[in-house]
Image (cartoon, rainbow, N blue to C red; front, side, top):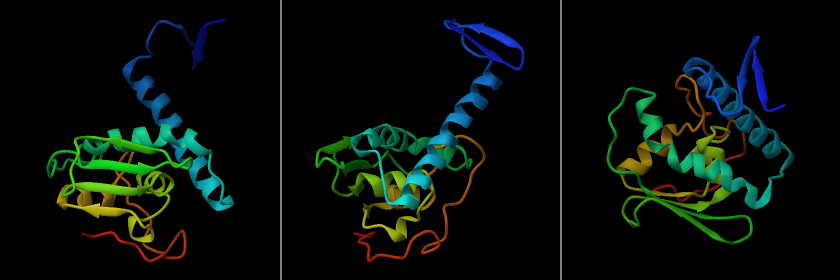
Length: 163
């Protein structure tokens, strides 16, 4: 007990994986979360406020989205203000009304896991850094991937994506 076996390599629970195994392990975990959200999306179900775990990763991977594409950051991370399934408000980054992503937490998670295009949501996206991020947000490991085309995963709904 307390050991993890990967490809015949046994590691104590207090030892880190070698960097390449650590990345692969994290990437596998990240992709499972991505696939689970897409599956729940198709069923019209979500895990309530447990979705916060995905929202945290989504909000904290602003820089990753650009670094993964070898692009410079367009500015500081936008303020993120989300309405949780319970009605609670979740926020990240410095408050700003000019650089902002605001709206439903489920929709934010769908965008950052690339299961839905930001154009198909009612997220409010203000400021160039926020627009650039939401156009290609990717919170999972691996090479850069483009989000689905608008309308390809869900019928388009009128959004308020600009401001």
